[in-house]
Image (cartoon, rainbow, N blue to C red):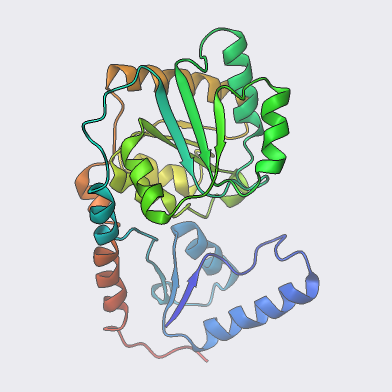
Length: 277
């Protein structure tokens, strides 16, 4: 059984032709010898079924990423639930913000125009981009757009502290470009467990958007569409103030706990098949 996770190769990845040739050779060995190959999304599985059409579909299995319930329970103990409510709403994106695969340019443009129009302000909205990994790229962009009062590039913290932040803020942000439609950020499942509203900036045709809509969440805007982001952000903020934004149910969240997922993983080993070749 081979746990492939995301795809090893794509049309333009890896860029180095020798590396891609080697990766494709590894893929062929997996297809030839593995009884089961596990992927984290349906999109990745579909990609490999198209690439290797002679493979029996049941040999390619989807087991998504998830979260650790014990770690979340420990983090919850440190959250101050008695803290007084603030008039300023806080949204957070937790983790790496890739300049291409999670490009926030249109998001920054949308914030700048909304600020100029008086629709949002630093006095009422605080957006934290936690541990982007690319602050040196993003800081000048914030300055050029005059939104440094709206967006904070915050340093990395421990995993426990990051979860506590997710559990305490008003809303959570997710970024995923259309080039990654067959991938889903692992933090999405942590967001589900945190029980907070999620504003996703992603392609509505991708696996990330599909997972959100299947969970009953529809606050989704195209990452590359400034106007769409403006409309969805204003609506999302208004919904937060009114307390009417949907969150993932506890049942949906529990389905992505690692306890639940490892049970699915165990079932893979209960099936014996003869690999082709």
